[in-house]
Image (cartoon, rainbow, N blue to C red; front, side):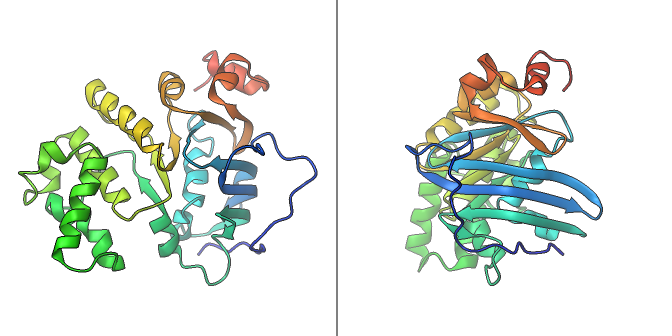
Length: 276
């Protein structure tokens, strides 16, 4: 069981804000001195990072550097990992998501997640979208649910392709359609933040391009945190980048600056392909 963080609902601002923070932007999530332990293994070390409203933030770094572990902290998915323990502070709109009494299920409705491989439920397209709103009581009556299903599929750019297949199984769709179905399923719960763990890694280039365009469109409404190993994709679709190395955030800033003028030698080596 994850140990909840002993942190107040509000934190004092230091005299000098970290490089990840700017006074002219709206901070959706604030992470300060976040540490993650799996038993005796120290997986994330003192991670401090801000997630701005309506932006795409990339988490990059070599395999095993802690990107996915950190991502799972943002919607308390590490709660399900045996012997996991999280310390530090993670605020969502000023509220500590690990504070006593905070329901992790409620956190996950506000911070949705799209996995690396498409994972639609073995249900109809309609029921894939309707599952969360039904479970959480977000809608009243079939007409309201029908409207939500259509709206979510439209926002995911999938409605025109599946409007005549709503009763067919979501697992019968193509890989790219399945991933967009999973995105529609996530946004049906009306989250404020979307976490995406390499959402195009299992897709062909054409399907990946569709998802990338969708990410750009969705960022006008949501904060998106994206794990990717593709430097080209990071340049194309993200506003800021945080570079992880051995469980630490080595560097974070606007994507163009991180790639064109990296300040940490580990970032330089990664961009040059010295490791990956």
